[in-house]
Picture 1 (cartoon, rainbow, N blue to C red):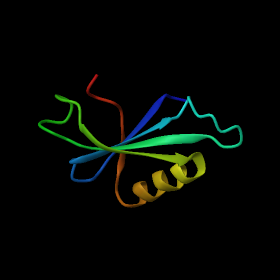
Picture 2 (tube, rainbow, N blue to C red):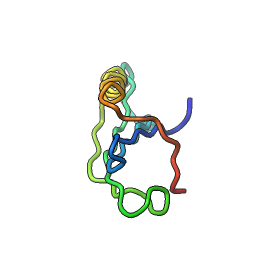
Picture 3 (tube, rainbow, N blue to C red):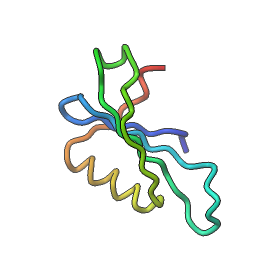
Picture 4 (spheres, rainbow, N blue to C red):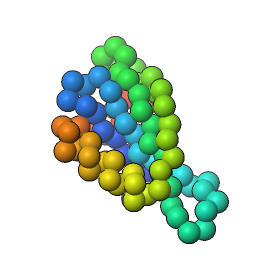
Length: 81
């Protein structure tokens, strides 16, 4: 599994990053961080400004991913290394 997974909204103004929380101490559940950011400038030229981080159980993160895809968000690679 890749370390990070990115989505971008249809107007290309916001992104979400899904990343596994490797430092999770819970022995029963896995968690993911879901970071929300906004695109500043041209896509790919500058990293997005990250505004919010949530920690969700992995099943809840999967539900969020599916919901966003159904709303028109698209998968993108990280383009601002």
